[in-house]
Image 1 (cartoon, rainbow over the protein chains, first blue to last red):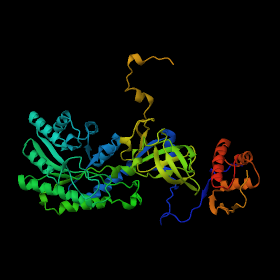
Image 2 (image 1 turned 45 degrees about the horizontal axis):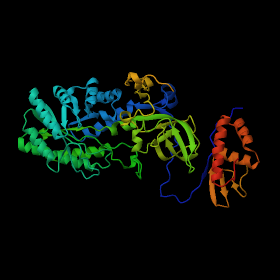
Image 3 (image 1 turned 180 degrees about the vertical axis):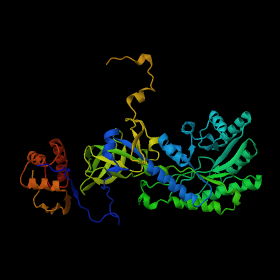
Image 4 (image 1 turned 60 degrees about the vertical axis):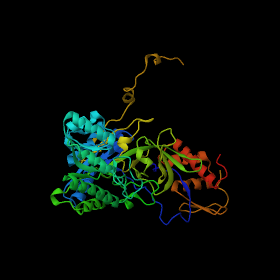
Length: 452
Length: 82
């Protein structure tokens, strides 16, 4: 007779009178397949943990976002935010869909060039651009977004020396009514710094002021902040037009649109509180359209949203290393992935689903990663089925920032695969090995030998 | 190893401790273990019986049983689990 399937015994104290009117949320619905491919098959072939990216989901997100804006505003151009996820395969999906590149370092800039993005379709943001970087960007006719006066003065010196024109914009920071106000990047609107920078640029014919840029924050929970930002950029644009009779070619509203992850400390789940892409589009488009631009001088609207386009296209598959009981009786589950791979676990309560069937019995647990380091906690408290060693799980909405901010700390970075529209699995980044690490190390000769 | 006196166990996995007033729920295998305890089976016998019935290893059963008894102890449903 075949033996019965095993589930470990569990006993739980029943409590009446919960803390609030909402029931506790359980996450025991298994996710056994991603884009039609079995989780267990992916792990069997590519190991555990492994990042999985859904190409169809990226395309769907991009097309939805473009539709939301283009049905409201006539001239829209998205630029893929490289820092959000700069794996070439991911970038190329966005470029195939029509996105330009938005980069914040020369490393990302060269990655975009290598991906085949024409120089004049690369937006070069960020506070760190060397003279050499600026020369490359000028020669490639890229859109240089100036962050501070030191950069502006260096750029003036460079264009005068090269006797070449540069296409520039300034990054503007401003009060949009949300906290925290991001004022460390760009020139401030309210205190007149942005206007001073514009005046300086306009006094140098080698600099072509084509755009105005802002990026007001991240994971913005109110669309109205973008209306405020758009209004302030429009105000600057029409002042430029009034003073120099120069229409501004584009307004770049940056990114910061929220994904459906749940922020730590949030009372409600992410999907219940974030604005939709249509909300953001409506706030921005209606502000610009109603501001008073002449029809033939409407600026192109640039958008650099990253997180909202990629987060839900990324999954992290992993396995349970061990379960244990903490001193206060809480269950602890140790996974083979930690904050080394899931940087966003510091911000989000990531949804974790089992990848196989369980009974309806669940328990509250702390989910730890594999690092021998106290900070390595993925979820402080989550209700999950009775996981045991070897069980597989799926972490959702991990496409943004994790594959760029991951750390080679204690463990090496794993394989990343992409599932295409025909359910084919492609390896898009090979896992690291000890050799990967050692190839950058050099050992002084006198340290080669020792005796113990 | 015995359940404390007066602990009531229902057929569908609910447990009531009349001394503390606490109620508990357990899954089917937990209930099975409690029933085996009621039949005066010791830890080794319980592991053996479960290993014959379920598709798992004895080492896993031993580990999970130790954890289960620890919880019974902390909930004051047993007095020791040596």
